[in-house]
Length: 240
Image (cartoon, rainbow, N blue to C red):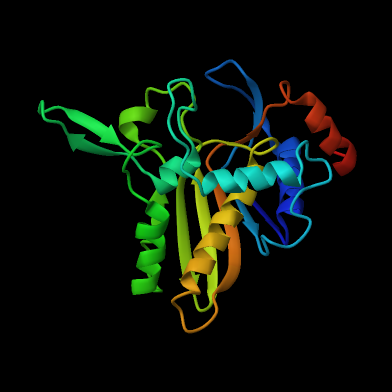
């Protein structure tokens, strides 16, 4: 299924309307009740920086989204009682195994020392060396950790595609809460897009600008029982 809109806010509203019309009830592993589309959902935002970035029905505002954008571009130090992961840590400090003196395997990165800055190394540098590359991609999932987690990352990859002077960002999700998470995810990705564009424009002889921002969600759903209050705002506005 497909949604296309000029702005993030309008795409959000269209995607919610689609799920309310065609979603089927699926009970998750955590016994949560969802409405899930019977097919993957492709959402294209033609101008990710154009207003309205947020629907008027959103339960969060510009300050919250600004903090979320900052998180995607920040390494958050790991603490014993902190998050299992952050997208910023996976993008900017992707964990890598290292051998210890005891001939065992330890891990660095993911909020601790070391790790791979995938945005700079695997996206920006690749695009500088070869602007037409199809290999400017960053991964989120770490099989060694994430298969055992109770709340593993939903976003899986972030790819940058430069064609002419337009930079597209394409993100894939194994699972996507369209009502309560898609908008902040997409606004966060627009911040990553802006960072990549600004970095490329320091090297390119012509000005790079924003193209499309695309998300592809294998499981696009709404927690229709858990998030009733927020959903009712959209229902009333969309008249669905």
